[in-house]
Length: 102
Image (tube, rainbow, N blue to C red; front, side, top):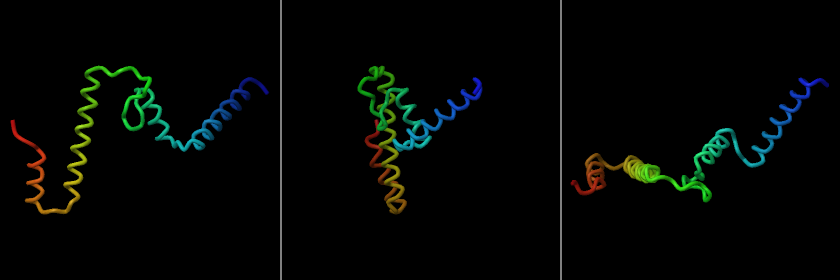
């Protein structure tokens, strides 16, 4: 075998081993990419920081709090939208969730 053939065999072997590893650990391509992205940014799957990750800056902490708040608002809106109540009850519920006006 010449050098080119050996290179092709090695590439095929690497791809096969990677496929076996992903299937053994239950990672499809999108989950694998997501896991890689989370490791890159120092976050676990639930959005919490990795134990050995660098501490986030104040701006990052603010953004994480804001994202958490927005997720909670979305949950409330989804609950309101799927309850099947009338329009008046829906408007009252939205007004009550807005809280006191400053």
